[in-house]
Image 1 (cartoon, rainbow, N blue to C red):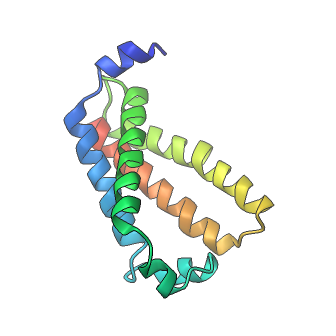
Image 2 (image 1 turned 90 degrees about the vertical axis):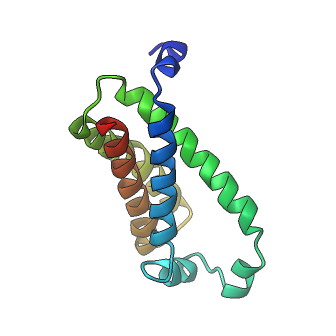
Length: 137
């Protein structure tokens, strides 16, 4: 893959929309509506410590990282992408690379399967949605 050539084919608007979509998924996934309480318990993060965090910095850096992920996924999908190919590549990336990497790390860190399911599940949904947006665009 020629990186400069691939960057030349990136659709920056679709990347921005995909990153915003991923950010929205994360906001819901790790909210009280879905998994925040279980996730906090599994990583031993009490409410008071969470409330004292620098949330603008955390959210800002998270968005930049999601934007980078969208750029790279768009490079993999390429200019001839479709909804189906975007979904397929999102699933392959998330299951084949991200979830397996998280799984290995969590095994050695002796983290719970519940935490693995929450975090890896987020990335599977994240990359499939991102791939769908990028491929369909």
